[in-house]
Amino acid sequence: MASNKRKVDAAISPPPVKRKAQSSITKSSVASFFTPTSQKPKERTVWSERTPDEDTPATLLVGRYEPENETEAEQDRRKRKKVAAFDLDSTLITTASGKKFGDDPADWKWWHSSVPSKLRQLYEDNYRIVILSNQGGLILHPDPKSKGPKAGAKAKVDKFKQKCSAVLTQLNLPTTLYAATGKDIYRKPRAGMWKELCEDYNIPQDEVDFEHSIFVGDAGGRIAVLKGDTSVAKDFSCSDRNFAHNVGIPYTTPEEFFLEENPREFSRDFDVTKHPYSEDSDNLVFDKQNEQDIVLFVGPPGAGKSTFYWRNLKPLAYERINQDTLKTRAKCFKVAADALSDGLSVAIDNTNPDADGRAEWVALAKKHNMPIRCVWFKTPLELCKHNDTVRALNKPMNPEARTVLPQLAFNGFGSRFKEPKAKEGFQDVIEVEFKFKGTKEEHDIWGQYWT
Ligand SMILES: [Mg+2]
Image 1 (spheres, helix red, strand yellow):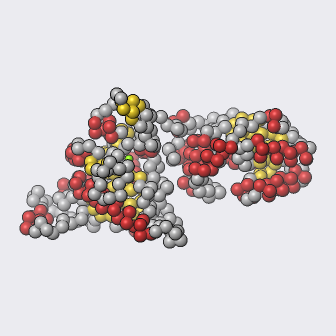
Image 2 (cartoon, helix red, strand yellow):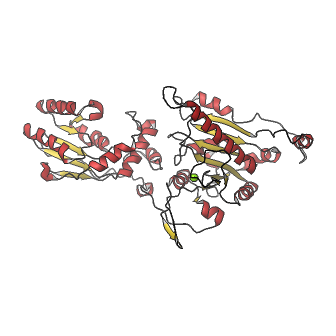
Image 3 (cartoon, protein in one colour):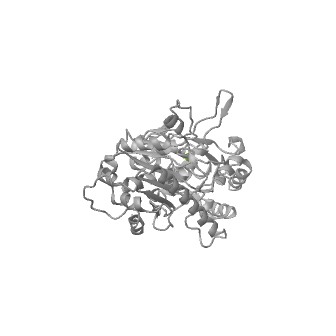
């Protein structure tokens, strides 16, 4: 990994200290006995930052807390192979004011009174305690070119740190809080924070006790229910449950963990487990029927259109017409018309959601007096978003170096989409269901939750 990342990392670990066997009365506790109470206690949370890759400013905020008497903790650090990881907001703490989000560093209370004692019990049962939080509202390093008030961003981060330091101080356990502020590999459900904590605490992946580790978070994709007379809202997200799936450890909600409530029903918009890896090289091979023709794609971004082109149509010498590369729609028509005049077949690798837009391609086919066929990619939008994110966040699977598309790109397709019909002027409409294609190693990445 990046060398500068290592440098940042170095700041997190306190320098190694050789300790002689000590009695439970430490030097500092004796010292504090004689310290006037007016003197503030030492801040025991050490803050540092991490970068997702060498070209990006740091986005992961890390606060490591070491209690005053850490002799015991240091001695058995290496033995902790069970991880008890917790989300922060609406899991360990909530606002004291009842507001949805609290900016005030003092505006917090435990989610339930049993939280500190339960975490201490886990620590005593030899668990490594960590806190993993998405904090998309924080900006660690505002873009110097952006117009927003930079002082405001910094103040917000400072307040967050103050609040977390207070939480960690009350817990008073050796623990680390990770806060993902970017939309990158660190953001749950992506597994980046898990990898960081395993490195920080020197737990090799093959030594983790996955079965007995646990992740507790409120974003469990639970559906709305009626509890007596009151209705309980659905979860805002499934990112905590999906994070635990990615890591390979059991998941529970705070209600199940702290209150011993029964699990509630949940649902996922997109379930990766319904797309297991299979080797059978498949099914659909494009069946060329005309000497020269136009093949028009219909499907959202991330549906698998370009992959289909490279696998099935490129070998048949189809010319690819793609607006991302050609920039304008007019250019697409020009290049397509030229290729047709040269005797080539063309594949229109655009989204083509609506019948009006498609009619212009049908007209072009008529003008050149040749058939036009339609390939309809029926990939659901949630799956398209997943594909798009996998591609954007994994360099080896991203030959065209694309970034994550905005939600608008998917919504736009959804709102304009009309099912393609042969009567629009197509020779036929070939329906393609999405199927993952790639190696087992690629599927290990694709088969995680990314959105
Ligand atoms: Mg939460």
